[in-house]
Figure (tube, one colour):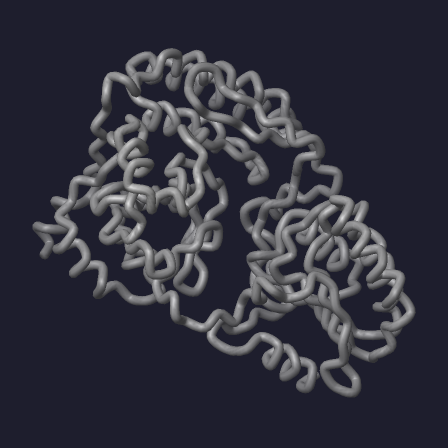
Length: 417
């Protein structure tokens, strides 16, 4: 078995067609650098010794880029330029070579044409004995990052550490999706803290690669993409997708529950939020209030500030428990921290996501020269001094167990205090 493990550690093989050759990977790095240096995060963080290290790295990457012959290797170099910035709202991704719907994959003519395209024909593969690998990974403990993961019942991958201990590869072991083959690379994880990763994931439909600076493994699943070790395992951490965005109800005679599911500032959500606020602003009458920010993907203070003010005022005469999880994201994290700083709440649950400091007001996608890669940059400053929470998120005052009903745990905590 040890001989086998020595063989599989770190063998990533790319087959490259001439039609895929990248013209101008060095130039794409320069255009990426030009876009990055305009961001508030770059101006705040890349100075002094960090500036020296960054420009030394840029020079080294330019040299490497001169010998790059395929889009995937070029994308890997581009990700290295982004990683020094502690800015998880930045999003670097390959452009899909073709947009299509999943149903089109059932058309044999369309599928054949798709698979003949260089991006699909020469997709990155992992050189490993899959049967032996699966046997080894099946024995890994449930809390290990290594192991077998599923995307529903459509795909199965094996995730294993390479010779570099903080680096892991995911190789496809089985797929019902006809444009994926066993042996292909599904994603790469680089572990920067225990169970926290810089990740490069392939889109499961269009197979273009994307950089996620803040991927995490929680309770046997990856949080940014739907890979799970046990798809049938009951999820106590996240709310169901069909849960109403806004609601207020009584849990017991003395406890009210307030669900705030989004602080988005689009017209539809903002109106729904304003209408809900007007309806409940005078209805918070309990001695104890549970405010649920789980899976709130954020938005802006234009939407959320009215709730911050309401809850700060309410906390002067009542106890507030703020429920958070790793799906508490962006402005929702900023709200949680703002309430915590004011001493208005007791936080319960798990760490928030850690993607909150900068954000984007304008959504201007930037296209990198000659590489088929795009950058979604940030343009907001760190107005709330949130940088210490980037990556780590806000840690709760009271942690909840992942394998038990969260609302039952919260009520037990309330009853014990």
